[in-house]
Structures are given as structure tokens and as C-alpha cells.
Image 1 (cartoon, one colour):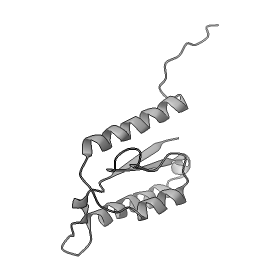
Image 2 (tube, rainbow, N blue to C red; image 1 turned 120 degrees about the horizontal axis):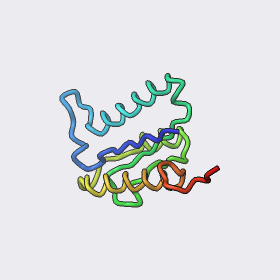
Image 3 (cartoon, helix red, strand yellow; image 1 turned 180 degrees about the horizontal axis):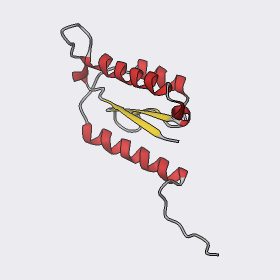
Image 4 (cartoon, rainbow, N blue to C red; image 1 turned 180 degrees about the vertical axis):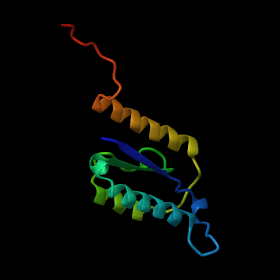
Length: 117
């Protein structure tokens, strides 16, 4: 069951607009939506779980965790607003902490002792 984490920059600079008038944040949202649509075509994606994390301060940076359903993820993605500072370091740290927490909970890559025959 792969977990794909999307870290979206929601700092105020993402309100900038392209020559076509689209904000950088809208472009980022569109890229995530397109990825999810294309991924859904692959039968191997049935067990995928998605996480949505932003540049907000923890714990507010977690918009959708791995236990949320697809509808919640999409709703949170659509409701993202650009404001605040660019806190890339904190956002990356929060993202890796969440992924490591999931690894601990799910037992992936944990060391253990096996019974011998």
C-alpha cells in the first residue's frame, strides 16, 4: 500500500500569477489533480493512500492524512489558500516525520527478531 505525500507551497508568493492569469497555487493544485487522475487509470493504484501537507505550521500543515478518503483529500486540495511565509525546512521536516510515523505504525522496514525452526 504505497503512500504518496504531496507537499504544497502555500506561502503568499504562490499568489503570483502567470502571463495567463493563473496563480502558481492553482497550477500546483492542477498538477496534483492531473497526477491523481492519471494514477487512477493504473490498476496497481487501488491501494494507494495520499497525504496532503502544506507550508503551514504544524499541526495545521496536515490537510489530509493517510487515513482520509479520496473525497476528503480532494476537498482539502481545492480549499488551499496561499498566505504566510515560506517555511520549507519545517514543511519538509513535518513531511518526513509523518512518513516515518506511518512506517512505524504499519511495521514497514522495522527490525525484529524472527523465530528459528
